[in-house]
Length: 322
Ligand SMILES: [Zn+2]
Image (cartoon, rainbow, N blue to C red; front, side, top):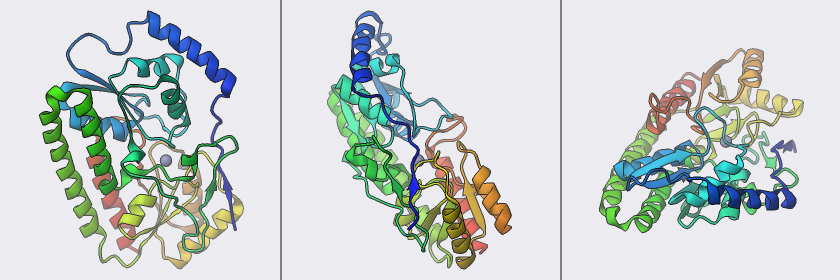
């Protein structure tokens, strides 16, 4: 069995945590805080792009959402400044996904925000990535990565059906935070839910009847999507985008690619395509982008839905031509 080691950085220890709490208390006491001007809006903080997007859609004009992960930044190994951690204290609502970003999990533990949406409470994490078509993409939690969620695949947003459950969680907590606009939040969430349902149908229709079901990706972000639409994802890097595949794992990928008549090696926008390109060159295959929507470079040009539809097109092209 090939086991790939994750190289995730370890969160600060207990001493560093205690020091951070002191600093946070100072910041919260003397800064104007992130609540900003008293504009009557709910000030929400989301941990990364997909949660920022759905909170914006549900909140509409009554909510101002900022993201802890800046546009174009890969979120897995995000580090927070003390000021960012302190900003959680002043936020009216915090939306995050436990198990994706250890620094954010720690910041929420330290600051105890009053209104929190923890996404996997609404769409529980599953384990993925073991023994796909004879290639073992299993990733072990790094030493020190002691949360129970470390074993679960965090990429729930790439399954529209699971994301719809998180949307309902955001609606509920937003309505508890700001009951006055509960009707607006219900209407906005209903519209988003409909859009996600239409996207799900596009995927089901678009991927049905394709003979080839196997696709190769950089990191194992598409497990829930593969499960939903009965595809097989084989990953180069496991769950962690920064881990390096072993020569044995690469050899296994080459065998799978030949056996399953794979035409395309997918890489992604925010991670170096070097390994994907090398593998594709060795096997004389094409490369294409499959975006895990972890961070979006320019959210005014591309949003969750436009990227999901582009992913569907790219998946179809790769699977049809095999
Ligand atoms: Zn990921």
